[in-house]
Image (spheres, rainbow, N blue to C red):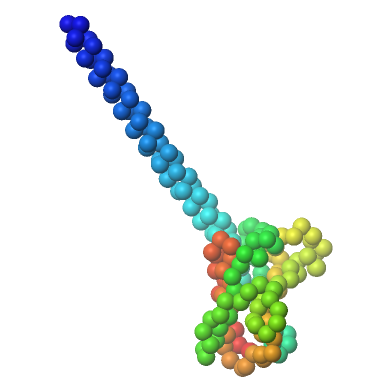
Length: 167
């Protein structure tokens, strides 16, 4: 009888230890999975509220094309997030090249100016809904030959702005 009680106690203690070890091993994985799902959902929501529309383009100089990009989404973008954008430029005879931001010298690069700041006196450093960003595609020593070009701008949250234009 005493041996049954001791045996049952040992089994109960072993069961408690096993359950504790399993909980310690499983709970962090469940928490990390839930956090990953929440993070992905937040990123998708951010991407959905981000929308950019090209409203105009012009050949500003032989080697410079300027595109007017309107923030027609619901959220504003800070200059630091605009700086994280990736811009590609290509045409029928040239594969798309990734352009660095604010380059100099002989290579192609892109730059931008927030016109909303100049027109409305907005100095918060954000590209707010309704404001226009002028993106300059610069090719020093290269004039844009007549033809069709394509610009792709991928924002920090993978929202895509794609635009075909003729020069």
